[in-house]
Length: 285
Image: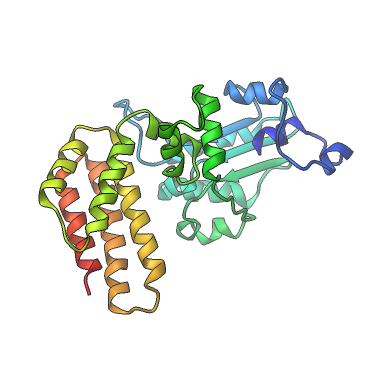
């Protein structure tokens, strides 16, 4: 979206009015500048490394304040300036309020693209100032083709197909699944979830050991699979009273505890046992 806007400064142009796709030729100047992260009229807000070198858990208010000089300058290349917030769910409270102030009086010919995976958690005042665009996940076949093109692999390769089907519509996630232990961890968690309400302490111990030695992305994969399981159960159990309450409580407990483990760098094996204890309780009855 950002590339298309930056490449087409005149929104009234006839070819633009009849465009059926946001695709642009690879040799387009805007495409090349955005790919090189060097377009002067594009600013992307995302989590950045902190003083320790580790990626921060939030987009801080000082990151949002980078928008002030950017929006105060004159657009250079295209006449439009584009801000991408990826994602607004990761803004801390001060950062969200700072973004809100900019949205209240946006400069002329400035487009904010605010990504959110959970819009209901955003400030209502931010939501009310935005037009909501629902983006569907890519189909598995599309992901496999994109992964094949990015990595120079056959889209029909078994590993590529398996990663594509497990990627929840994300090419980046599929590539990450192919590049390490993520796919194996995902399959191990799915096996444990399929046995609920029964639990397998030995398998949980092995899973916990693998998470202790792994990077943040592996932990995130474990939590994402658990969330997917809970989301499916919550949708299926609407109107079931007690069980629905247990599932909702488990959802809150999983998210809160996983966030604490990541923020404070706590041991991960106890997290595995606690989560499966909550899930087993929620799955009973």
